[in-house]
Length: 287
Image (cartoon, rainbow, N blue to C red):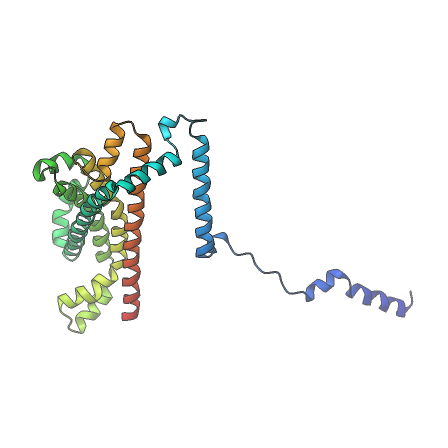
């Protein structure tokens, strides 16, 4: 083969489509579905919910007896009737009132107890067996006692909600206080900070994440405590609605009340999350 022909073949080989791909821009990497934006994710969540409701509607009365699972249309009609006559708002307010009071009382007691014992190793060791023994008691079993002590009014529901909240918040607060970096506390003491300043400027901000983990975990339990109290002895509230609808074999009414309870749980959780976000932002700025 002549040198000219060999050079020509080499030139053509360099200009083949396979080699030209090296000059093309690299393909864009596919983003993971978990990194999807808020709006697309919300749209997918709505579509998933609609699909589940459609399947429920199709299954009810065909594959499963309508008496057992009702159907979305019957539940929507029940909610509309309750909304139209205004009765649902009375029950929602009764549940919200007792839940908020119980949550605030239990959260305050849990944070105070967690900080107090977290700062006192002696008291922590002294009371440790009694605290964990009482924590092991099923709190629902205390409902009859609370009704006996506080009566059939809102007080017994508040007490049951508070007792469910207090230990969840206490355990997380105690762990958060014990995990505070001792070097930070020693540095504050070297700057002659008082005990109150150390508590407010070092200990509480450092354990804030732990505290809010306990608070967010306790939110549904406060609602559960209120609902249980209303189911046992009450004449209003969403728990009373569930119990009354179940006694009347009204499956649509039970699901409608449960839907209202679930919506309340979501609202309460979002409120706690919003408060946490604001405090976290303040903590970062304050640095």
